[in-house]
Image 1 (cartoon, rainbow, N blue to C red):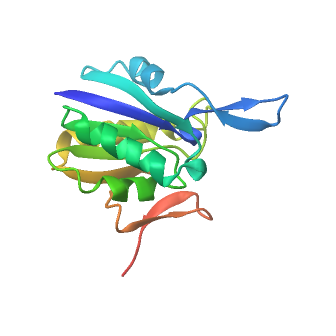
Image 2 (image 1 turned 180 degrees about the vertical axis):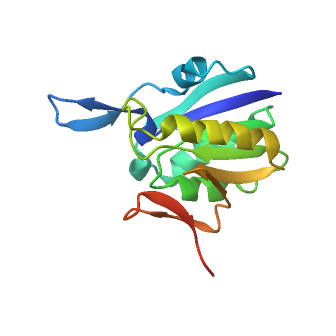
Length: 162
């Protein structure tokens, strides 16, 4: 089983620039994280975008959709910004025959206190065990994109209660 990993930007890949006093999306960190974890599965990493998810447009989501839909791999992990990860996951739901797991981080992967490594580990485990469909892996849980929301006050994702 080979896992295809796509990066589209977001906090997980942000870099802090002191002179500018702001964050910008930098090079993806997932390859370094997987290498440090000494994983034993095959994977391939490609970048689609380098954007903060709040800056993503419908055209960006369509580009992500087209890229994933045309990919030959059945097991896909996407690193994405947390603010609009749910919208992208919902857009991808009509792609058949693939297990697609989106994940991200509340703090940049470059920070020691980041949740990035943990979330990536959860996403990688999830993509190998779930049935075809689209999922979100955040905060140690796997969510259905139609039944989840980001709670900025608690800084986590949670199930939407009906």
